[in-house]
Every structure is written in structure tokens, then in C-alpha cells.
Length: 308
Length: 262
Image (cartoon, rainbow over all chains, first blue to last red; front, side, top):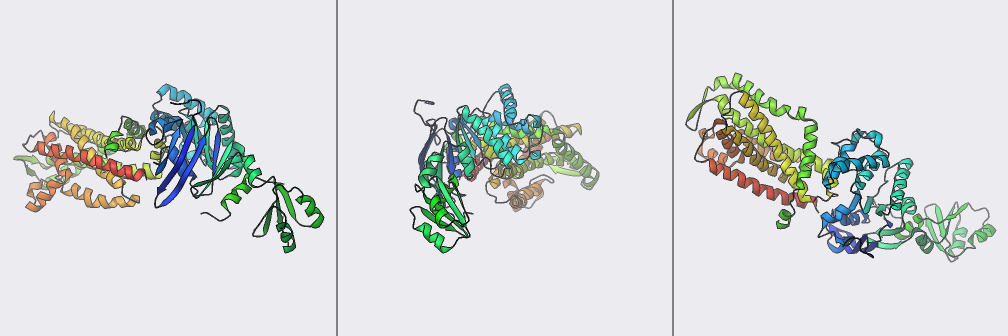
């Protein structure tokens, strides 16, 4: 039943989860193709983690179905989990074991034979550049090292699907890029990746496709470049220290205008004359014309209200 | 409940193995308490209290106080080791260390994790009781080979008190709430469970209460084994301990599952 041609790596249909008195996920349907890297984008509390935890058999769905390579998460959790590598949001390395022993003990849960675990552990510690820290206590590792070790642990069972729940939250830029490099090299080997993030750059760097999710529902999905072009256009005008005349002038044009605090954003869409117009009419206005990003899409779709 | 029992598997041993690995990497310090505890008790009670209480009448025999009390401390150890492991230690693994979360990302199910924790807490009782049995044997306080019965008694007694502990682990909101069962259930058993004095000197109502406490039965069984003394009621206590341990274990499993899977 695994790996039939046309089988999705992950398939979710009308997946919902209600718990602790609220509907965290409300009817989510999506597909992830084998070898695809898909990113779930959403503000805090959007339902990303809950969705991912249903796929990885931590939470039973309230309704709807989810399968991994055709195997139902509800009826065959052991089989599903054997195919998954999970990097959770919170580090849950075993503080009672050193670095190497963390991997050896974890391999046992999968029933991998001892010698095989040891070989894989050595190889993976090499891959995440922790070979010289084998005997270190987990508590001695930096945040970035811990994340790399979690990644190595997730790869121990040679998963077909890698699930990364906010893999770089709280890391410094070096550590973040180290994780990205490794995820890209995994993608090259054909591993399917489902990741959640609220870093737009991370999504743009890694994902073939992003799914924007908020209030437990999917708002939009597509390739990052397509989404940007479709939702925002190719450029954004940002202006500050402006007067009403400037704002009113822009509001009469075809694009979308947004004022946030002391900043003005103008999304020209297909209108590519705006730069010339502004040069003529408001040559002294402080402004910046930049390429639109996924962040612009994200803010357009999920709004600017704070979530925490 | 039926689904919970069906999901039990040999994989629980992987969880047991994890806890055992942690324990045995520091075995030198871990073995110290069960080694020293009986020696301390024997010194204190032998040199001190034993001089005040020369003889204890127990089951038609006259015993030295030390002889009477020694099996009692084994029974207490069976209770304490299992209860502490399945409350404080399990809670730390579940709540602070997120150890269960990490394991649940592998082919193991919640049921495997809970059963593994139960079996490990049980094992701690068995290990402690076995070490203490050795020490008490060296001190000439154990009748052999009946003393060997202490091992299965420690297994079922340990399972019983691990299940009690895990039941509370499934309920508490903070680690300090373990003080409630500690002082309402465990300490009363420690003092009144037939450990330090023969309970038949109690007034009738207190005697009835004492015989309801699981530790009273565990202590009775342990004492019978250590003294090599058969008695017609042994099978009642054995049935009580085995039966209650299995019922509580199933209950703890169901409660913990509800806590871990929202």
C-alpha cells in the first residue's frame, strides 16, 4: 500500500480538532506530494502545530481523516510513526543521557538493531556537525546544537516524511542557516518535508509550496513566488513622513493602500507606472520601492492585529 | 478501556529500558539507600528502641523487636520506592523533561509509555527489596529459602504502589500536590500498616481499618516470608495484593491515557 504511484505523502481531508474548549483546527484539507517541501505559515495560535500533531499521531482528530503514504493516522499510528521523523517545537532531548546515548536510546524505540543504530548515529552526528560532542551532556549544548541534535534524532529511522515544527525559532542567524542548509540537502535526497514557521524568509528559502493558515482554516496555498505575485504584485511602495495629499493621491490609483502607524504601504499590483508618477509629483517624498515578499502576503491575509 | 489494554505491547520494555539505563549508569549512588537503610534501622532499633521493647508477641511466637521489625522496613521500602518513582520521577519525565513526548514520536503508543513507567517503578521496589533482603540475610534476620518469596511480593506490592502513584500523577496540576497523597495515604500506611508494631494490639475499629490498607497485607506477606512462618490467611492477603495491583494498574493506565491524549 505504500508508495503506489499517485499516492500522496500526506493527505488530509476536512481535518478538525477541538480541545480545551476551543476549535483549534476547523476543516483543513491538503496534499503533500512525495519529495515536496511544504510550509505551514500562520500566526501564533493559528492551528499549525495542532495540524502537524494530528499528522504525527500525537492528537487524535476530532473529525476528518489524515493519511501518510496511504496509511491512516487513526487506525495505524505505529506504522505511520515508523515513516515519520519529527522535530518538535520544544526541545525534548533526554537530559538524562549524553549526545550519543540520546540517539542510541531513540533508535531502540524504533526497534533498529544495535549495530545499525550506532552506525547511523555516527553518520548523523557527522551530518549535523556534532561528532566532537558525543559525550557532552545535553544541558551543555547551545540552542543551535540542540536543534541540530533533534534533527539528527528525527533522521535516525530514515524517515520518508520529515516534520519540522518551527525548526529555527529562537536560533541565531548562523544556527538558522545551518539548519536550512541541512534541510535543503535532505530535500535533494527526496525526503518529503512538512514544516511550520512564522519566519517568511524560512518559508521562501525552503518551501516549494506554502499553506497560509489562520483561525484553524487554510486561507491560501501556492508556490511562494506565485502567491506573492497573485496576492500582492511584484513591488511595494513604503513611505514615511508623508502628508494627506500624498496618501490621497495614491488612494485614487488602482492599487491597494494601507496606513499602519506612521508608515504607508502602497501595493501597485499590475500598475507599473507608479514609480514614474511619484518621481514627477512627489520627488521629495521619503519613500522606498522594494520587491514584494511573502511577509506582505502573510500580513495581507492574516491582518496586523497582535496574536499573543 | 478495552482498546487501551489491546494497545499494550512488549514495546513497553523499551521505556522500561530507558529508565533502567539512567538508573544503572549511576548504580553506585542508586544502590546506596537500600543498602544503608536497613543497616541504619537495625542500628537505631537494635541499639536504641530494641532495648526498651525486648519481646514482641507475633502470631503465637515470641520475637526480638529487631526480628519483628526488619521485614516491616522491607515492606515500607516496597511502597516508598514504587510510589516515589511513579509520582515525582514520572512527573518530572512527563512534565519537565518531555521525555514521553519524545518517545511518542516513535512507533510506541501512550499505552507502552505508561506500562513502561509502571514496570520500571515496580522494578525499583524489586531491586530495593532484593538488596535489603541481602543485607538482612547477612545480619541473620532472614529465614531461607522462604525469604525468596520477598521478590514476587515486591513485584506485586511494587506494581500496586506504582499504580497508586501513577493515578495521582494523572491528576496533579503541580508537583507539590503530591504532598496530598503522601500525607493522607502513604504516611498513614507507613505508620499503621503493620510495620513497626503488631497491629493486633490496636483497638478493634483501628484493626479493621489497618487490614484495609494495602501495606498491611504487603507487610504481612513479607514478614511471613522473612520469618518463614506459614499462616492460614496468607492466601487472602496474596489474593488481595495481586488483585488490587492489577485493578489499580488498569485504572492508572486509563487515567494517564486521558491526561496524555487530549
